[in-house]
Length: 209
Image 1 (cartoon, rainbow, N blue to C red):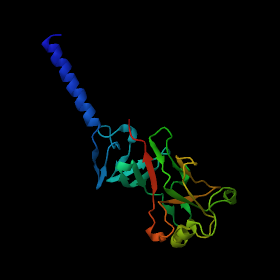
Image 2 (spheres, helix red, strand yellow):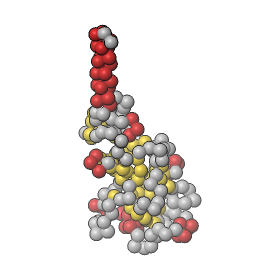
Image 3 (tube, rainbow, N blue to C red):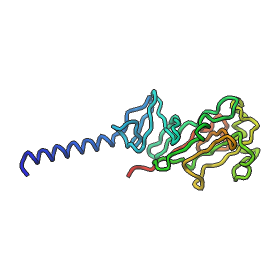
Image 4 (cartoon, rainbow, N blue to C red):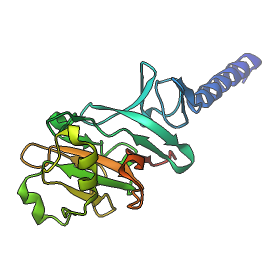
């Protein structure tokens, strides 16, 4: 190998190295929110498998049903972030993502729903009473509906459950004929007031190899 060939190989190695380092860099802030690696808002930063979206200064997660959820906070050391639950439309008791069946994650993506979410379902059909969910008068959903009276969910059949490892980690389902609205609280504490609950849906990711 002559000197020119050696120089060509060296330059190619440097370019590949720079490209690799660049791909591992964290993305720029989205508004005031940092976007830690491996989350990626474009092809030039982060890891493209961990795609999130910066829309007008708001960092958002896109579901498998092409519905955007705002990211409220990120804990990169725990590989987790919290998204805002869908709005419950006033006086209808319908979640804003009802038309797409609720939250659905791509099972081939590195994201899943963590086991720290207490999910509350509203405006349910009576068939839900056959399930092992908490549909009693002391369910947390009863506390929520009294505070959020404008949601239209007051006095509907509601149930709650902890999203544990025995359940699918890729879906929170709502539908007409089942339950039409939901919300979620992260790390639910029954001793806290409804106003101080940590509303959100915690998602976690599998770290890249």
